Image 1 (cartoon, rainbow, N blue to C red):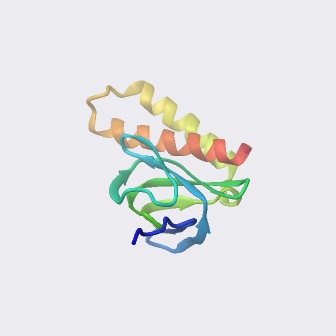
Image 2: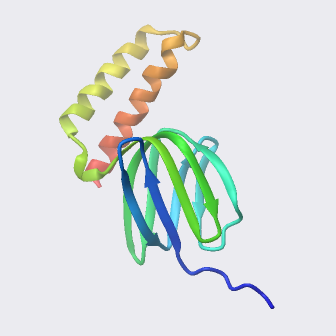
Length: 138
C-alpha cells in the first residue's frame, strides 16, 4: 500500500521572542546558507542552516515574505519548522531605519578589509537592511 503525498505544508517560524507564523501553505522558499531551497509537499526530509535573507511562502496565488536573520530549518514531507535568530514581517519594517542602516553598513564596509573580524558582522547588517527594504517595497 503506497503512502499518499501530502497536499499542504505546515509552516512554523519561531524566534527567541515569538512564534509568528503557524499556517498551512502550498510552497516554501528558504534562504539556506548554500542558496535558496524550494519546498513543496512531499519534499525529502533535510536539515539546513539559514542565512540572512527572505523566506517566501505561497498559499494558492498569494505569496508572502518575511526577512530572517540566521537560523535552522527542518524540512519534512508535510512540515517546515524554522528556528531563526530574528524574523521581521513586511508591516514591521521601518523603511527609514532600514535605509539608514544600509547606508551606515556600506560606509563601514568601505573601511574594512575582508579578513577583518568585523567584516562579516557588518556585511550581515547590510544584507539584512537590503532584505528589509526589498520586502517593504513589494
